[in-house]
Length: 112
Length: 113
Image (cartoon, rainbow over all chains, first blue to last red; front, side, top):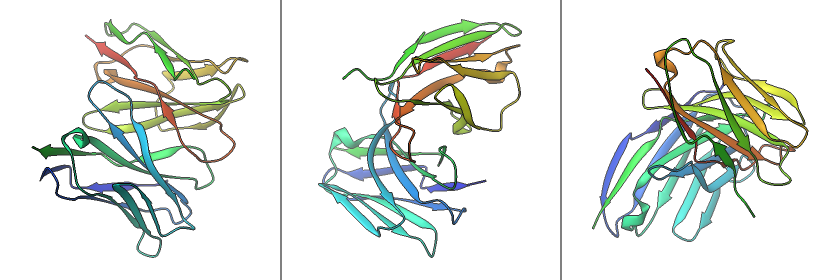
């Protein structure tokens, strides 16, 4: 089955700086890669996703890049704000099933 | 549009008991997935139901089971609870017609004593 690895597990940045979180996946048949943000006491919420026919996608301060050859994808958050502090999860899916395999998460702390 | 609703939000059980968790998906969504979230293992897929049929199942023992009703509401059951079953159980709904966005509820936090 699919295996998704995520790094780093914790990340601290100064407000206004950029944050980058990286994930690798193992199943070359996976074609859907979402990123979720989970705040304390809440369920994960989708912030951006990318499919394997696209190399990059951007939504305001958030962007995701995908390298199918290397089987890795990354989340980029620019101009970080304190409200960006949360746990971020990457996931892979679509390899013939409807389930997602999640990375272990990155706890992002934005220091004012 | 109402989100995914999970009940109960918190519950405490003792070893050997069984528990049933409920999930009401977003209106119009026909797929319901269940995930277990723990600090050590992260988010792990339990099973997914679509139109009352289990479509996928994760690598969990048979003590974990689920079902989906004709109105798309879903329940999951854990029998003979073990201490290691303490976790946040998350339900997610989606249209289910392709691999796409999962909408998560806030979860049911189970503590097994």
